[in-house]
Image: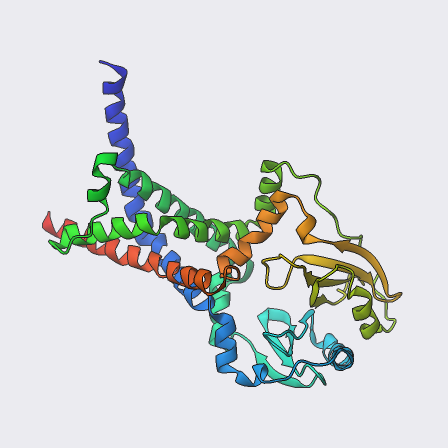
Length: 364
């Protein structure tokens, strides 16, 4: 018996095993994968949905620098004790302050005077509820870890499906044909055709999603793969103090530290550290908030460190591109539409795969 002849039974057993796993993992974990992906289709338009459901936020005029400073001081004074952890500055897209509170709650404040305008949480806002499902399966860190496992299973389904489909070059066209009937052939051809044609974007969505769940390992792996230098470290923790903070002065100290960068988010001191971090979006960054950071000692209004995300090595930059690629925040309306459509594909694959399996088993 030649080596080629001996390899045929092994290949047949491998294909049979992969078909069995592809079927039952697809019918099981595929349901969760499809529902998470569907929520991603909606969340691709979360900024537009916020503007549509709460037009009063968008109608506000952007504040002047003096108004912005006064509003910041008032918001922090009024709300820090109630759990305010960070605060997005008014921007052209959202000209009000967006504050982040425990359990995913968000509160919105007038850009000019700091008055409370709106409270959103998972209980009163279906988009935030959907976001929590998409990122944590409504179960916090435990749900996020389950989501990571589902993502790894989805990755296996996509790659095993590619292996099972892979035809001879002469049969490539026929393998992608979509049939109208009979039902068994129809559902199989639709499942196979959609899976192959939309594989690159579906694979990208899964890889970026899994990469964000396992952020630490992903970042370390990418930095190693691209031969990055040692990761930049933020300044050590600063002892928290009860001293008053001049927030307008802190804001002014950070502004202009990176040429052309826009101040986007203020991270307030934590219970175990008095350090203030201000996120900035430098020119060329894809992340909607930016990954560049200025760290400050707020009590002395002293800059302790500056991180320019655009000057990082390649591995770190690839790592930080995962979120904007996954969420449709780069590439304009075209990429946003592609991301949204990609979220529909797993449901189509689940339904056509199920219908094919049911028709095939009914014939036996």
